[in-house]
Amino acid sequence: MSGFEGAGLVVALADLLVPFVTISEAVAQFTIRCFHLIRLYGPPGFVLLFFGSQTTWRIEAQVLGKLDDKEALEFKKSVQDECTMISVAAAIVAQIAVTALSLTDLSRSHWVARGFLVFSLTAALMAVYYATTQQRTMGRLLTVRQVRRWIRGGMNSPGVAHMIPRFESRMKVQYLDPGELASNNIQMQPPELIKRSIIKQCFTPAVASVITLSAPQMLLTTSLVALIIALGIYLGFTWNRGLDTDAGLHDSRNVFIMYAVGLTVCILVYSISGLIQDGDTRTEHDILVHYLLDYVLKNPGIVQEWGVKAELTSGKLSFKPVTLMPPAAAEASAPTDSGAPPPAPASPPA
Image 1: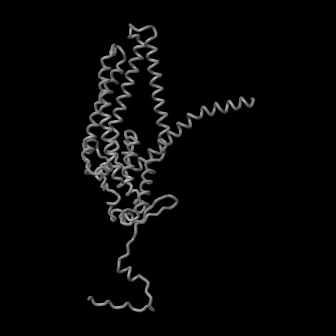
Image 2: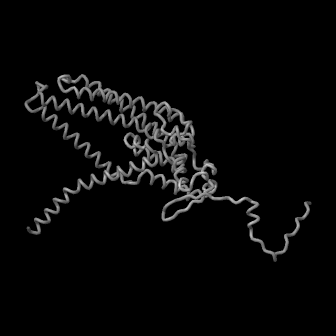
Image 3: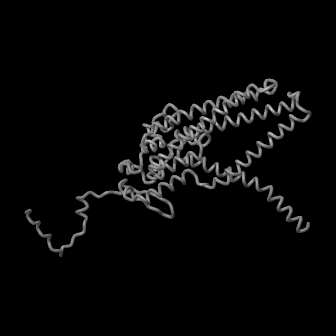
């Protein structure tokens, strides 16, 4: 075997291994994310993994981590604008689905096409409902504190209870800003659970809030995908069964090929652009720890009010409860100097 043949063989093997390595990395990232979500939320983490938007989760975590009132108000406004846009888009998709149900020879094609069209119509209508309900819910949050409390899944969050079940309702957890934490609640925790307790109460978005905000966009995407599948099935059976008798010999086949090629190109362009933009590979747990560390470094006085001592060892943040010594014991244990002169008596008040 010559050197050129060996080099060609190596290149061919490398080309075959590239998809395998890519798939392995994707599976590894998915497994790591699943582990950290279960660690943060427990069993509800599976719901967040499959039905929650990771982008929505990161935006909510940023609002809780930065604790910026301006960002909280911008978050509320962006959610309302997004709900308005989704309502309009979902209404358009629903109208297209209704129109597609009256296509020529649709009943002569496979019944799956009609089934996907009906499903697309149903998902689009539900997207309109959830978007309008979410917009009304966000409009009732008048202060930035209410916005952050709603993101954390607080008990006083309006509209959450009837929109989606609360997974955290059985847990007696206070969802507060870091400056509102009581020192006795933190000091009662074991040292290894203090960090997790602070992250849970102050910096973790609730499953309910993430799913609620993700539902309209997810339903709209599902409706659009079902509509595209139904159209592809209809065009395929129109070509396979020769339903369009007025078309030329290969016209139906050419139309179906153009549809498949155009759809593939659009999906590839969108997928590649999404992969290029999404460069943050941190897990949810790493993001929350980063926000906690940033807050501790910027607010040492509030950390002292918690009654704990923050320690940063090799880049890892940990907390230990501070044992306060009673005043009497402090005076008794204070060092004394027998050779020092006694303190002068206090002068009488004028």
